[in-house]
Image (cartoon, rainbow, N blue to C red; front, side):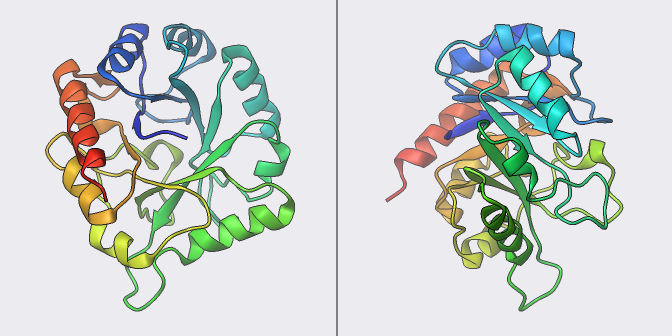
Length: 236
């Protein structure tokens, strides 16, 4: 789906800058409570500034399928990213069946690397969610592996917090049945190392290239994309 995604873009100027710097996917955040949350008017301004060839990714958590479809249609989104909790015991939740409800819109699923219990498959919940989506009829097209969050984490703190994934644990956890990207705490200084250790060919960042929440720093964006491209070129 993508190699370098910059998420949480909130202005048309930042969207144009990210595209010019070589990002191939831009995330528009519609998650309630996020400091990067867009409404439909601002979302349209950002989406209109994204040139052809760069993916428009709408990020949602706990949003009904009908509302996601409405926003996707209004803004001509290319891909939907689900960022809610994996199970029904926590809110906001994005159940596996949501992929089927969004059929026709490719779905990227943000999944969690669970390293709190030694000896347990760190991607067990991720595998179960993808398997359930497949059993319901439609699998996600990609998985973004983000840092684990606690049971009570509200929607606005599910991503973009700067918490780093354990890259070694991710490499040891093995692969999923869909393409994978790594997120969580990536910066211009560490993204190439994250690629080297995980062996993954896609990366995603939000806070790691910001001057302030929702405001991208052009130098950090350029440096991040350049470092990521170098890391990707060095992969076997």
